[in-house]
Structure formats: structure tokens, C-alpha cells
Image (tube, rainbow, N blue to C red):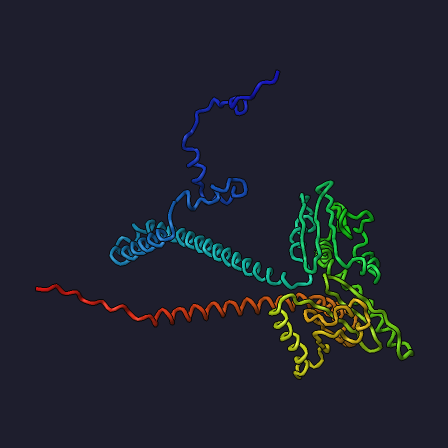
Length: 437
């Protein structure tokens, strides 16, 4: 029969007398004992400056001034007792040295507090900028933060998060079987179209150790990470985490890379008019990206939908500025930009789906003409692919910011007019009533 342990059974009573002042003695250590046992004593004992002396910074400065005054009095008025006060003078010197040490310690604490506050402010500012950066960034910040602890720290974590991204892309991060096995699934509206342009080759090249043949239900792609099988080098795990957060960018990059390779082939061939592929990516409802390689350039066309009249007006102003910006001498080497509001560009005018929407004023077409200098192999090509993917988000983000700015200006103007009207009200004249006397 099991018996519940009493407190006496858990902690037997000692025969020695209890010393009620043990806690105070624990906190009152000499300097030698403190430095000798600072790694073994509890945290409250390490802060022996506060527990032993219980002196604030202002008290320290006051005692320092008082002790210095006493030493000056002894030096000036009691010189004849020089031999007799030698011990007292040495005691004052030691006391001042101890006070200086305490002042330095307090200054160090103040510096630590200042550093902590600065770090918190820096983290806060960085957090704000990370939010702003995450709005229009190549990688997904939420995915990077969710997977940082298990992938970088190799800490098993229970995960079940659904993350959404631009263009209707959704991710599911979960640990369905074990905390050591992370499943990462992706769903994209245009995944089947991307599969026609070599996405599987990219997945095998970038994510081959983690690709799964059995895809999670309702998703297009699944990756699996076993924490014990991840690279031991922290830099390699950092690169893996960055690569996972860039999966949307890498999936959409494959048609661009294919078009750039086709342009290089056409440039080397002697055929004057090659027949390039027109790659269509319907990444949003009623919106698509069209990519076509030609002999000396690559044409990228965005069809964008403006659902509101104000969005159409702001969008037309922004896109016209894109067209006119190339006239500036500083950016004459930028890609050529063309904009049309109704008629589709010549490269896609033959498509049946665009013939039906030919007279729709809500749809606009933006054409980027990329020349070989814009997609030279290396960093230039990667940057071009990353930036051109964000064009639609960049455009609509600035449209919304402009509308918000206009609304704030309108509210400020209305408040100013209300103040003017309130000041224009005539003051009520107070008529003094008199009685008949």
C-alpha cells in the first residue's frame, strides 16, 4: 500500500539548531569570499552590494563627499597628529577606494540599463522596419520566423500554422507525426501551369532532399524536414531557411529563367524569326503574366485588374509615370515600359480569352521589355526576377497608400474648415435686463 509522503519524510528534520540569521549571513560575504564563490552562490548573493550595504547611488556620493571632507579637516587642522592619525588616514583612503569601486559598479549598471534600453529600441525599430520590409519583400517573413527555432536552433516544436501570401498563395506548417518532423505544404493557383515550364527541375535542384511524393491533401507541394537529418553547419541551415521562405519566388522564377535561356539560344541561332513559346501564368483571378522570349529581348506583360474607379485613376497616373521615367538621363538604361488600358499588346492580342475582354476598361496591360543587359547571369538575373515578380504588389500597395494619404488630407482639411466655421459664429449679445424703479 502506497503511502503519501509527508513534508517530514521528504525533508528530514536536522538535530542542529536552526539559525534564523542564516539568510543575512549568506548575503554578507567578504569581497574575497564573493569572488571565490560567485559561480556557486545564488543570484541574490551575487548582488551583495545591495544586500550588504543597502546603499543607493545618491547615498554613495553623499558618503564620499563626507569622507573627503573629513580627510581635508584632518590634513588641515590636525597636522600635529600626523603620526597618530596615519592609521585613520589609511582607513579613509581604503574607504574612499571602496566607495569609488561601488560608484564604478553603479555606473556599470547604468550603462547596462542604457544598453538594454537601446537594444529594446533597436529591436523595436528593426521590428517596424521588418514589418515594412515584409510587405514588399522577396521572401516570406512569417515563414522565416515560424521555422527559425526548429531549423536554426534544432529545437523540436509543435507547429500547426496556416500562412497566407500575396496572389492567393497559402502555406501550411505542421508537425502531424512528431515534433522532430516538420511538414511544409504550398498551394498556388498557377501551380499546374508552372509545372509545364520546368518547376519540377527547380524543385529537384533546390529542394531535392526534402521533396515528398505524397502531397498533403488540398495542397500542390509538400516538403518534409527531419531535424536530425538537417545540416550540422549553422550557415547551411540559415541558407535552407532562407530558401524555404523564398519558395514562392523560386516557383514563379522558373518561367523567367526558361525565357532567358531561350533568348540566349535564339541569339546564337542564325534563324531570323524564331517561334518562341508564349508562357501564360494565371496567378490571380482575371490577372495573368505573359512571358515571351525573342531574338534580342524578353517581353513580360502584366494584365492587372482595377476594381474601383479611383484605383483605375491612380493606377493610370502611376503607370504613365513608369512610361515617362525612362526619359530621365539617369535611368535611360532601365527596361522599357509600355501601358495600354483597353487593347492588349500585340504579343497576346490573338488569345481568345483576351478578345472577350477587349472593351473592358477595368483591365490594364503593362509591358516590360527586358534586354540581355538586364538579365545577365548571376546576381543581375536573380535581382531582375525577384523585382519583376513584385510589380503588381508594388503598384497596388502604392495605390492604397496614396488613397490613405488623400483621405488623411481630406479629413485634416474638413477639420480646418470646421474650425473656421466655429470662429465665424456671431457671439450672442447679452442684453442687460433692468427693472422699473
